[in-house]
Image (cartoon, rainbow, N blue to C red; front, side):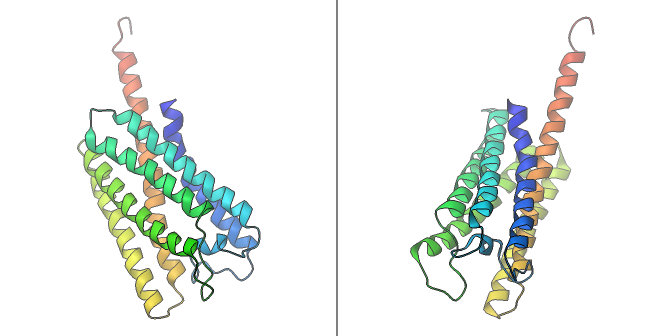
Length: 215
């Protein structure tokens, strides 16, 4: 069961990527460079239900991955345990963003769901940064490369956020590109972390079997 939960960490980013690609193909004049991913499911967008399902599935799979980490760490490693809990929280927030609080169209009427969308996007970014750094420093005790990789991923997320802010403030048509720096940083991190945990689990199982009498 735990292995299946950890596998969700590999599937979730792939589902997200597939949804973005399919959604962009379904929305006329959509630009990956200039437009946010949330614009694919904003109010009034064609075929929002299909896109909503894909993003919702990715959010649920991310939460399941967090639960897998939470179970794997148990009470033995508080930091890793907390990182799993934070990824569960991220999945819940991402699901809320996708289903209940769509983005307002740029230049259109400002609504309460649209305001909440921006608030929850910021909250999800903070949750992810905390989860990445906690897991990096906890898991990095046995894999120093993963600690360094997690720090770089967090820095790339911050860089993408700063780039997006500057693009919006200066009216540059690059906010979509900036957002994708942040998205790529944490989505690839989730995938790499899931693959690393699965590989470690296989190694531990093999070592346990080799240690059994008669083997």
